[in-house]
Length: 640
Image 1: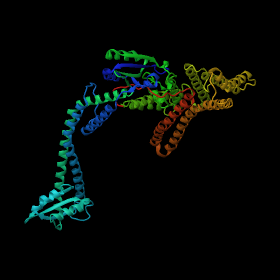
Image 2: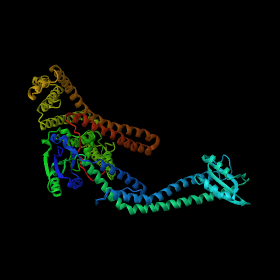
Image 3: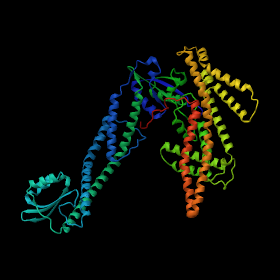
Image 4: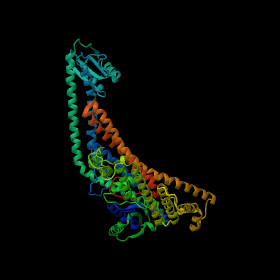
């Protein structure tokens, strides 16, 4: 709980004919993270990687085809739990068959949608001017309207010529050997339409004085055409939906197969081959080591498996993957840790400390029983979300609300009112000096905890020089507490301050100044820089210690400042409410109080959250946090 999970590395040698089965089993177990063994073991640096380019290319093509088929069917495919084995050719056959069935329907649907869009635009244009006679002119901003007659024998030619452009063809009546016809097209196609009409010997006719009847006929025809398009589109959609239902099962299994294959290729990237065998290595949790070993032995039969603890490897600890393990209570606080960085393998996991300090600081700065319970309620509502990150964030909101409610009870504040319940502990506005003193004391505890964690981390790494002489080392911690004791005595106005305090402080600073000499002596390493430069660096470190720890300690005063600001905002809102009560009465006064509480929750709640994080990151984490490079991410049956 206070450190990341212990890791082991497994190296396996199995026969080539078993490797696919071994990889599949490892992926299904979901506890094996492949690693490039050549970066760990120098003696295997000459091994040849497995050939995966062709397999990877084929899989990418399959995935593209799968996405296209899913899009055409309007399906969101979830991988099947039952994984079946497919050949690449069989999957291509399934896709080809589905594509052939869908292509005709989708092509017709696209044409109908375009036709429907154009017809609806025509209808809207005619309907807007329905009160006027249908005629050429500026009434129709984007329509080309032609009324004329054409020889009956040229009608088929006219229809064929107009087929490629959006239009409405409306034969009105027969006149001798001519057909009086109304043609409505788009203004953009005017040149094309006029050329077609000229080719068929079109004879223009002036519109009659009153063409409302003609307009009504056109409107009816357009409506019929629109309804026909919509009906046919609905029929095609129903056909596609039926195809989707029939294909969902096989596509789900294909999706699972593709996901598995992607994971296998990811594993094969770090695998190396000899003539008859394959070597693969990967990280596993120490507790899962035997489980993986037994599974591989059951599959591969004759195989060689080597197990090593992460601590026994000759690699930097930053390169070892990190897995933080917490129960459901502390799991959400990993969001706060991960936003800062991954704690390096082998160092103290600060999650539990942050959980306590963050909630205490948030509650102390935002203490109100009513607002706290409101925050917790909102968090419970958001908790219904399916996204895991949102659920964890909502849990954090619930915790913050509970902390705020607890401190609200301690302060005796309910939606800013301090007359409803008595204060169990203290009222910030009435005990300003006390609340400032408590904030500084809390800061001293957090800073001291950061120093202790740094010392423990250094001792775990067997870096005793760092444990003693680091800017957050044991000597600095002693100096810090001696300075606190000295300051406390000055504040209680003691005239005779024991000189032992000053002697010990200067002795500690002298040891830090002499760190280069001590480090060279005990670590027996050659100095790359001159002693003068090293001593100057030590002097800078001393100045950083003095100024930094003073600033760190004073920084915790913001806890008291924000708790006072919280109460001060309520005073301002209540005063504004009292003034508006004389103008707008009780309803307006109540509205101001409600809106004021909402404003405080939204604005100050956000600011207090940021300040709580800032104090943890800069005043606590800066003392000890060493960042790792990788989180533990085993291969699983999931999308990458």
